[in-house]
Image (cartoon, rainbow, N blue to C red; front, side):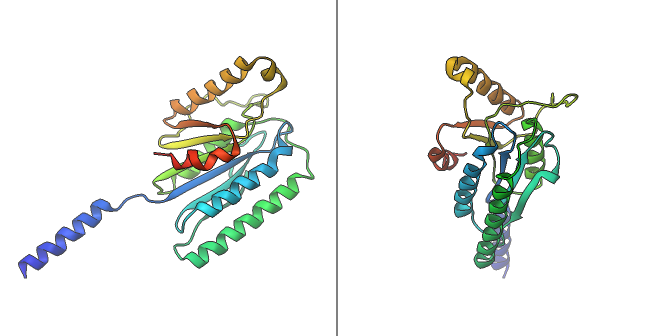
Length: 218
């Protein structure tokens, strides 16, 4: 009897040690500024890919990058998938429908006048902080050119500890094509900003490389 009780206690202890955050939480940020809005349909492709890889219990959210992005009002959709596979599949279809509607709406609207990437990253980081996932990613579909409105203050450390930030479809300006060092300096500044907050910045050179780079996440 004592031996059996000891075995039960040991099993409970081991299961307790093994428990902890599992799964993945992904926040996709889509640039809807005037200089980038025509590239929004590419974000839908990325989201469709992600929906195909996420498992029951994982979380996905989609938000816009606008002139002032530190707000949940720019969140297009968010869901933590059910543990039941059939219900999770239904939730994925619902997210896909919302994203399709979002892309259609954006095709008839002018882009925003400014681009607040820092505020969007902060909003995404705050959202992910409340999700108990082992892997946390922010995917930024943007040219990564921040252009803030007057009086907007964004000089803060982004709380990105344990978060990977993937920059996708970063379009170079004509000036950066003429002088590539300007592009490299801009990417270096974002790399340093993300690292300062405890995260890891990953520049995705081609959309097709995203699955492999995400699979290499620690």
